[in-house]
Amino acid sequence: MRRSFVALSPVMFVAFATLVAACSPPAQPAAPTAAPTAAPSAGAPKKIGIAYSNLIADSLSLWVARESGIFARNGLDVDLQ
Image (cartoon, rainbow, N blue to C red):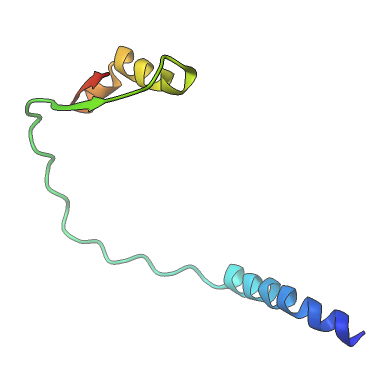
């Protein structure tokens, strides 16, 4: 009996600590700071190069993002190599 209690005591401690953490009140949000300044005006797109090894399904997301204009909308000029 003593042996099973010793083996289960770490499990009981973790369960109790989780229960205490879950039942504690949420932390107060930080006081709001000054409003963020406006984003700088969009300049020339940032040019980056992305290399891939073969045309396989792993690199499909890069091509979809390029063809659908996601990179351009985020100010990136991507060169897929």
